[in-house]
Image 1: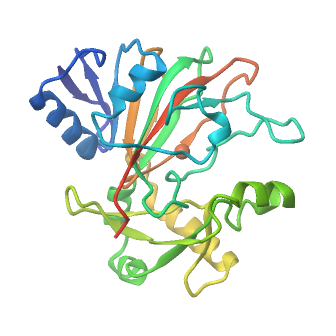
Image 2: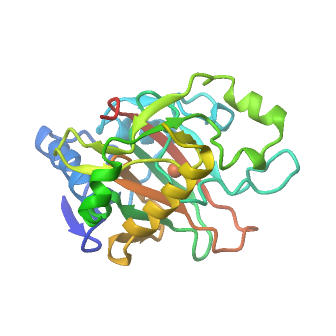
Image 3: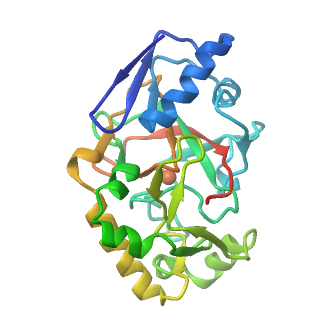
Length: 278
Ligand SMILES: [Fe+2]
């Protein structure tokens, strides 16, 4: 097995393994270390059924339920479809994950990792972009770091910034399984390496404790602009057979909608349970 960096601050490629075969303890340990160190890890040339994909992701931890149960792969627990053909009630493409975010912050213990496996891809574009928020945090001026260190975000299924996109009925339906807001630190420490990162999902943030929703979104926007330096970004351009797994504790990500939406982009997705953020 070979691990090769894909950019200076983020991303590595793994070649020379077949995730359908049992891996020895040393290889499993290396893979787990690599995802923490490189934040996004692409394991190339895999040929996986949804069940094999689930088994492969369990090398990194325990799979957990996801927000969109209606997108589950029938008969396979914990595996969801991600498709550009999903639409809202009016029939418009959902364009999920188009904004920078970290996954599923409405859970008390959000996923530490998310894994995707590509089934169908557009001819070009449709990448998944990442920003290293560990580097983004470290690069903030010290007074800003001190200012935000104790801040807490209030997380719900549909936060204040996206409620307008949905009608009241949809909001109720989507919030049904998660009515109690969850509070997370805006700056979290990864227990695996002790490093701090900026941590939030603008779509799921109702507000920052002590601030109005409007003030909160403004602060988060500002933080994002300061933290996102071009050198901390990496866009994963998908190849068929790629299994991509990333550390939600140290990165924000988004899906690029820069391609012909008539071409199907279809992936499997698994979330790996994390600890309660501190
Ligand atoms: Fe996401």
